[in-house]
Amino acid sequence: MAANPQLINFIKEARARGFDDFYIREPLLNYGWPVEEVERAFDSLKPKKPGKNRIQIHLDDEVLRKLEGRAKKNLLNLHEQVEDILRRSVLNLQKRTPVEEKVDDKSITFFSRKKR
Image (cartoon, rainbow, N blue to C red; front, side, top):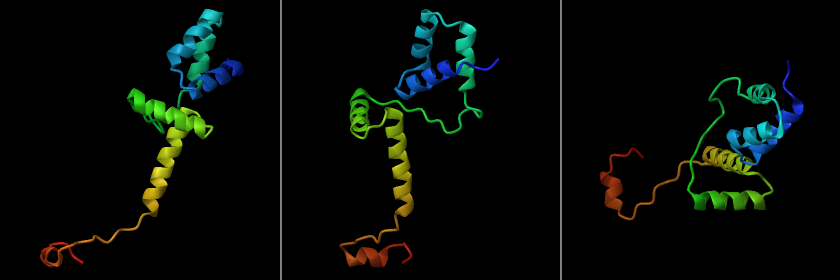
């Protein structure tokens, strides 16, 4: 039997808003959804390859508050904001070209082991 599309959409939306699966599952069961149906919906959302495209980070409250504020300002949810920051960071690293070192003392350059 296929998972209920309503439950799947509800779970996706709740996760996007930052709710943990425990806090999503509990109200559904309390509201009367059958355990089997709820579990089927959660199972259908499991990644096909465990761990792929998944990063878990722990942030202190102040950093989390700032990220949430930034996300709200950008009209994104927290997950989308973090994803955007990581994506931009990777793209910026790819654009960088090696920077010539600035050395104040010419003798450091002369005696340095770096090949120039």
